[in-house]
Amino acid sequence: MKTIVAFFSVVLFAANSYSATQCAELKQELKAMQAAQQQVVASLINNHETFASSLEEYSTVVKTAKGSSVKTVSSQMDQSAQAFRSRGLQGKKMAAKLNDATGDLLARVASCLK
Image 1 (spheres, helix red, strand yellow):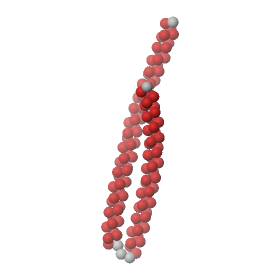
Image 2 (tube, helix red, strand yellow; image 1 turned 90 degrees about the horizontal axis):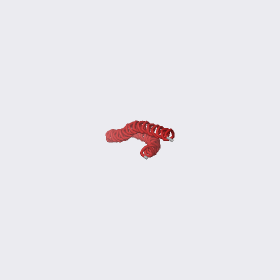
Image 3 (cartoon, one colour; image 1 turned 45 degrees about the horizontal axis):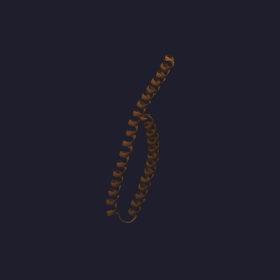
Image 4 (cartoon, one colour; image 1 turned 30 degrees about the horizontal axis):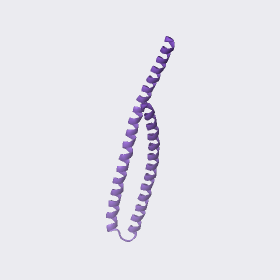
């Protein structure tokens, strides 16, 4: 009987040790996720600044544009719009991946805390 109790004690201890290791790994993942989130937010802020600067630049050029230069400016504005849309799509994909990873990580953290 003492052997069985000792066996279960060792198994429970091993399970708790594994859980502690697992929790330590989750902590590292949380730190990595926080860094990824900070990069996404910084990228969004940077995109807004770039967009605003582009609009200001185009506004200045349009004020002085005449004739054929208006078409050139219009074309450049269209190209910029496409570039910002492309960045937006990339951001959506990145956000979806981050969201999926967050859901998975939160589920594992919840099971770790049980």
